[in-house]
Image (cartoon, rainbow over the protein chains, first blue to last red):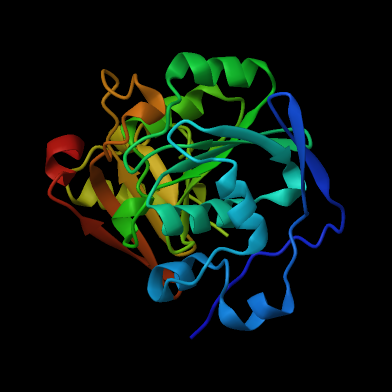
Length: 178
Length: 84
């Protein structure tokens, strides 16, 4: 059984700003336990109901419901983490990146609360759409939706990604790339 | 890593020509790629206006899989409807 785990050993922590308060969160780590147990691995979460790792759980705690939003240091979260959150909750999550920070938005099982106008506003602020997740384990879950394409068109970038609950992903592009 | 569409453009065009499919339509499709797969999906310009609030999957009209040094095409129930 092969568990692939995405790791960013940046070493430094960061501060999350939520409303008027600050909460510290550690950078991505790979504790020894995770190397062997699959803790925090999306596929292991789906298959064996493994728990999230501490960092992912902390992130989820800050995203308690539909349309919860949090800004975190870029080094403290990646798309595999969102895949893990989707595996644990069955909800979609979207990630937008600007410089050294990332905006994470929790959706539900069918959508994320980002329409075209809000996407344009994020783009104008300098965000890139790093990607989002679709709950499910088969390849159909990787298929971008009609809305995904129109969202991508709003951003100054050529590609984005869709991850499913197993950590598999598909890259999709703007039109006329052929 | 992602399969590069441009690398297979000529083969895709040849396949379309040989099967009565419109290559110019494929160029406008949503394109997704994995390590060994490319998918083309139809995008209705009148839909998808809700952004991520509407995650209805776009219909897959053609799939391409890399097998060794060659590629394999797979039509779907939507191929003729959107590419003929």
